[in-house]
Length: 422
Image 1 (cartoon, rainbow, N blue to C red):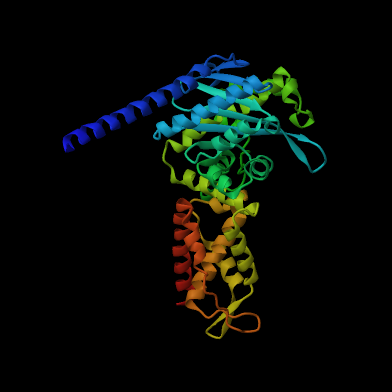
Image 2 (cartoon, one colour; image 1 turned 120 degrees about the vertical axis):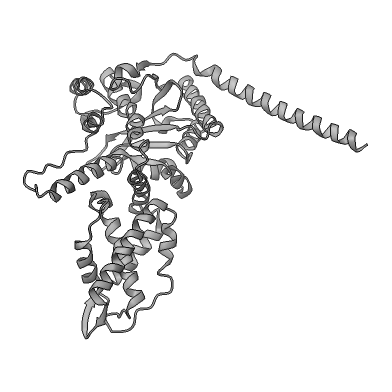
């Protein structure tokens, strides 16, 4: 009897896995069957668009200007998400950009979103879409696509318009924003890091006169990293001349000129190949920049409340002080002296967009170490006491690569305090 039950159980398990496999197969057939049926608005060949021998993909470009194309895009999004789940070791890239229309001196409305989807396949998909016109199902699928933590999301120069739109109007919820920020790279910050590092090395060689900080325009960065050739840059610049200044154009996805169509699709074509140049070399600095990009963007928009609370707390105690050998030392003065002397090998604190973050966080590290060694006094000479000053260190562990960098600052702080006072 037990043997019969065992056979039945085994048969049921086999049937279950057969059913599961068939369902998966049907699911893939349904997805794959629609991938090639819709004629793209344009086809690009990587061998013609990139630096020689780095990209042989075929790119299908779609302008989402009707419901049929929108449904097709929706299915491609679904395929891309499923493919990642079934191929967890395969890198999936999403190049992202936005265009905006000026509606007043200080206000902009989103006019277009551009997305480039790439993985290990020899085909890529570029979609030009207008998010406000998407059906609810498509919008949900778009949000799902953007919030797969494993996807590598790439933008360039996103802080002023792209990120505010993404955070405030598309993703909205903190949980979704946090997922988007996992594996998010802004290549402008990588460019800033490289340029700042080059400038620091030049200054170190005592060649300060004539030092030129290169701009971080996307074209320069692509050219410097051999993503494109000079001829390709010339073609892109000629297209811009034909199009006219982008800020003077009222963009309507349903009425795109050929030059504007080309301009917008090329904004995302090169981003995945560009980021591969850096993530493939396993440089920890790039991981730090990725974490900083998400962290700083969140705190600047009051999404990361712990940092905002820390900033408020730190600024309130700048003028608190301690007494050592009958001499008064304010916290702010100690920080100023320390900050001006530390040699930051990774020079992240010199990147403009990260400067305020590092000022606050290094103040916290300095003040925290002083707090552990001295009695800190308020203006009225009442002792300053706080019970949860170390909670911010625990929170920063959510950003492991940034946290490791901050531990080096902590060691430098301890060394400085011991040298100055003990």
